[in-house]
Length: 149
Image (tube, rainbow, N blue to C red; front, side, top):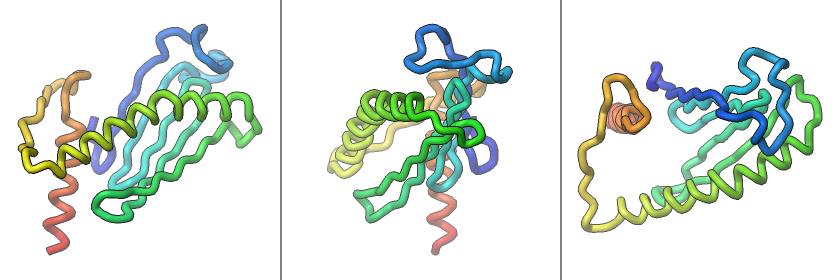
């Protein structure tokens, strides 16, 4: 959901017993939650169940390439190589691998002569199928580009 120049997504973990790393549900009231924030123009962070923090920084290199920097953090900076290493690898093998394929496919589509931006699906209640976050990003980009001229 857009909030100023940030987007936020939060959900509860469906089944803590099926997690691939140990979680102490009694460590805090939100220990089983997942939250993700995107901060305009190129940073995001995610809090995974178990209060593990992941950060992303995107640095555009040119119109077709971007460098991505990631960091992983635990409560009080306590070492947790089993959790961090396992979670980082799992994320790399699943969500990141899928995202890379999707983003590269979108980039190829945007560069094609047949690209025609279609309408976005905007649910006023911000349901899971709504593209309100995509619209917010588009609006922020158009505003930033207009300010540069």
